[in-house]
Figure 1 (cartoon, one colour):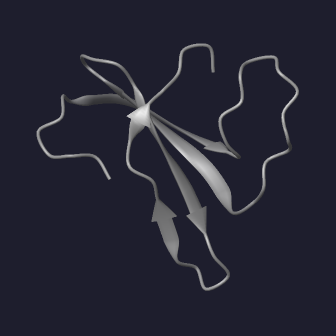
Figure 2 (figure 1 turned 135 degrees about the vertical axis):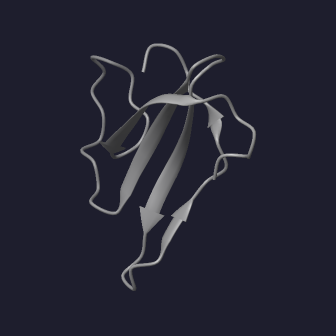
Figure 3 (figure 1 turned 120 degrees about the vertical axis):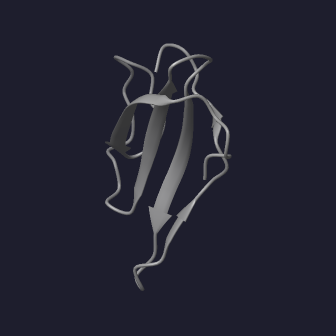
Length: 70
């Protein structure tokens, strides 16, 4: 889902569920939904939401800015 020509990736993080601020009471993660957070060597991190259906088809949203504090 990342566009070509982005800065080098320095870290990736996979989390079950959706965005949830640190320390906040959040809905328990569902097994078919997750987010992937990507940190680059320069610029702000981004995330994509990833889901799968019962047939095993995986889809991802377009990258979005990762909000601070999450």
